[in-house]
Image (cartoon, rainbow, N blue to C red; front, side, top):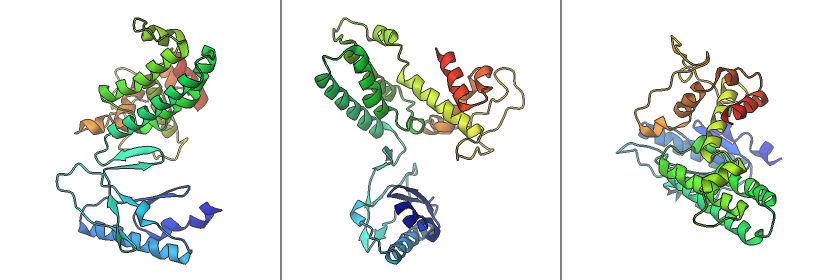
Length: 287
């Protein structure tokens, strides 16, 4: 009923709104002072909308984040109810910590800290349980923390990759009950048959790519992102050109990094006729 109640909110703004449950995000590309003025006008329109529907915004819970690499961005103070909204460097949205420079350092620090705390709680309370119970606890309560929405924030820096893998290495010691410094965690992971978290993130990304390519999800496969090479000297027939990247940050973002992974897949995997078949073939190839 609440979703029906707020469903017309996007109709009163010219900027791009995103609604999820009781969260609302409003964004706009700011090229000039005129764009900033229009964004403020949209905030004013939302205030009129909430009066019509007898709702109330809390300015103290509203934040402004500027995502830019410009040295001299357009700085504007936005208001609700005449109160200036606070500007932040990092904002949490749907469980993801978005930074103004689109670096995922903060997000990975947050989720690894949370995962390690949860793992510590399990170690204290399930130390006498058999390994299969501990493994279920890890896969149910810890691993989802470091994998939620990973297709968005999959890191490309070795430092962040190592931080995430360290969570699973600690989990391997927890499950096997072997905390000796002389023990090989790599051997534990092999015996447990756990793929690396990085490999799991890569699998999740190409699964998302499959959904996009075959229109199984509402993310448009934009032509400029899915250009096929004129000649194919190697690889499968559904290879795509990797978008040009001027910045390392863009090079590690979803489409450039995932297209590289997609192009390296075996032809038999890409030829899967369903998402379930694709996942099955992908797992067999990885194994």
